[in-house]
Length: 418
Image 1 (tube, rainbow, N blue to C red):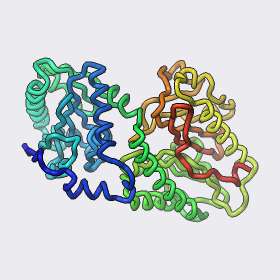
Image 2 (cartoon, rainbow, N blue to C red; image 1 turned 180 degrees about the horizontal axis):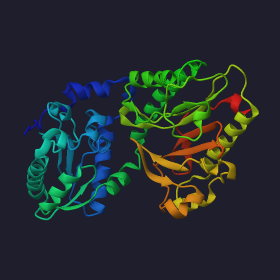
Image 3 (cartoon, one colour; image 1 turned 45 degrees about the vertical axis):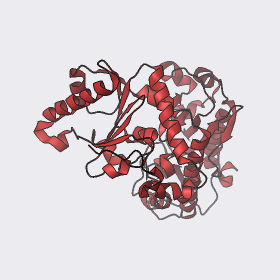
Image 4 (tube, rainbow, N blue to C red; image 1 turned 180 degrees about the vertical axis):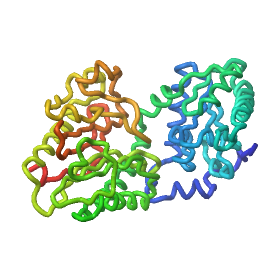
């Protein structure tokens, strides 16, 4: 076990100091951001009678502590890195050889080596490893929380969760308290969101300027990826840039297809950017060299109308059901290929809440209240049911005390708005 020096000046830790001095951190009190987020999680735990959380989703660990380490790798290889959070203690179990990455954070009381209870790490002995992990974790939980703690978990592999339950630990789902914590942003946290968006918008501008017929979708998409990584973003979570007939239906991933003259090019950024915050807006461009056709402009104007209408009805106090009832009606010829959501929460990833189209609310929707401090992404995909090109547009907004604030500043296409 690694024991940290609680009396050390945490601001002197070189990795943390480097983060605080980075250009995208200018004017942001990251310590306040980290403490606010950890406090939000603890408040939601207390409200639900949860004594401890074991978080292994890398985004949730980053939210609760501000620490990061190989975010994609550790989310895929679990539990290789995890956080034990109680009402008054925070223990980060860090990946082999990386314990120093958790040092210096006011949100982490102790760093311990993780025990990777997975088949990849343990082979045929994985069940024994899981039971050993569970015994050690159960002992720690009872030492910290009493004999019968209620413990929330989210991304543990099945065998580890079963072994922990076999130790007599009462397990509940950690998703609800963490999602409810994450959905309300502080003013200081919003500075991180804006920093991430500005860096992503700069990358989209570079990508837009690089558009030319004859290049592949992947070549064009790489311009955005290079730009955001250079700005200290983490990664692009999806591969959603496509052209021509591959724009409809949506969710066709970036490919080696060559972009042809005068095709539409649709993009959803999905960038896990500066400070780990999600920059999520969508735009559709025209490859040129000629002007867009009337059909292309009609698709674009229709998608734009949907986004503008739905942004216009969002206000604090509106229920999710009321939003669905007032949301823009999708014309029948585009309904089959509609985007699966009307809007969704956005923070360090896509998150709670999901707001559904009126036609989908009875089957998929749930109720709740839109609150100040929520950041939402308002979505549109317009593509004819029978195929042809499609248009993807999306705006990221903040819900304020009186209405909304537009967060995504990247312009729309005048030539396509017509």
